[in-house]
Length: 272
View (cartoon, rainbow, N blue to C red):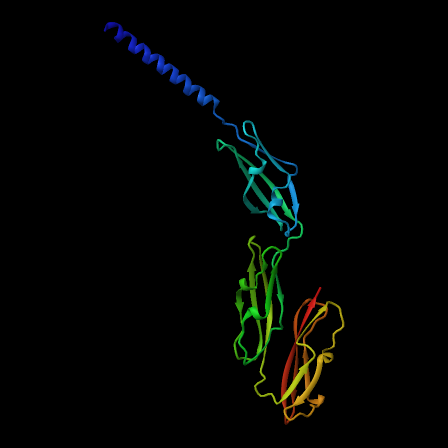
């Protein structure tokens, strides 16, 4: 009995020592080394039309225990840089013990452009018309495509049913956080008393700066309500077009005699 009391503590101490040694070896043999991501380039140039997997181009990942982890690299973040079309992209990779490797590099989209707001229809309304900005403008973005439905109206002086010239300022943002803002003029004409139709060859024309412009060339016909031709003596053309300055302009054609009245307008877009 006495021998048993002596042996039992000894066995306990031996078992405890073996367990402690096992824990010590486990701790020291555990993988605490992070995998490493390597890149052949610090700045990668891409096109906005490239597939997402090209973001991983030139990257490899290795781990001391798990070996090649290239297929496990993931894109975790993309932050817009100071320059347009430039981003800081963060990559990560994990080994079997959840040790993490991280790498950050610059991605530059060479053909990136912020949203562009275009005039698709002339902003010429009659006093009877209703105004919906999406009927007159369109937005094309190099990454998000058609953003017309995302147009926001920031300022608008337009008064429905009141003849005159107004302005509207709109803006739109894409998924990269770039915002474009533009201001467009609106012309409202009163055709309520028209007894003569002024027909133009087109309602909007786009011309390059410095080109020749003659407002009379766009006049197709003037016809009274009974089918007779109007007399050009009674036609007044108001023209504020400046062909040396890019912008949006209106030409107003007004006919008024003792018997007939009529009005129409042309929008002229002068580009660089």
